[in-house]
Image (cartoon, rainbow, N blue to C red):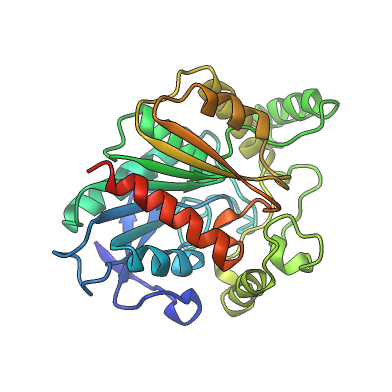
Length: 317
């Protein structure tokens, strides 16, 4: 594994970790970042390692605060830059465009991340935290046998929030574009600029916590190469196809807790409620007043989420 940059000056988390370039089986280069936990290294005295799956547009450094919260609770944290975002390879000519042709591509990244965790001999057991698109990728990975003992999801993208009148149009346009030369066009209503740079804090759909929103804005200013704009039409078709396929499957048996803000406006909440009602050893926690990014809400919300998640992890060793 070749060393890669980790921008600690904007990560705002524990220090002493590192980042590596990895190459997936199809030749795409991705990046993983490690915060090794409370012992200061990747051995001994740690309760386990969290494999953290970020959402669409996200990147390793955004989860510095999460790594700090997990470190205080005894866990190492390994975070990934998915293909097409962060400093991973971006296959679209427009680097601001979020693009994959099929969500199976992300599972190649998952396999590469797990192999890296094993090669680095990170402390066992492994656990999963997946946010938004990372929750979609994570759910598929659980079905594929991801070697984790328990999982926590934050606003998982098990469906995309679309008005009923828009859904047939989204399916039809994305299907047509995916099967033509239009697949790498931006999905309607999306733009090259990253969300936190284009939108003020007031009425944003990510967080009610101004300090965390400004943290994300500072990162966007300090390292624009980490940023990502809207998704391609092919990504949209791939996401709609994957979420529909996942909702047709029974829930995995891995113990899980899922957090969902009551102000959620990005992912479809009905799919989350439906799956969690039939998930064995699963619990759904609604967070009153929270937006999409529960893990970027205020200190009390974050503390409750991490206390609950690590309590579940500690009960499943």
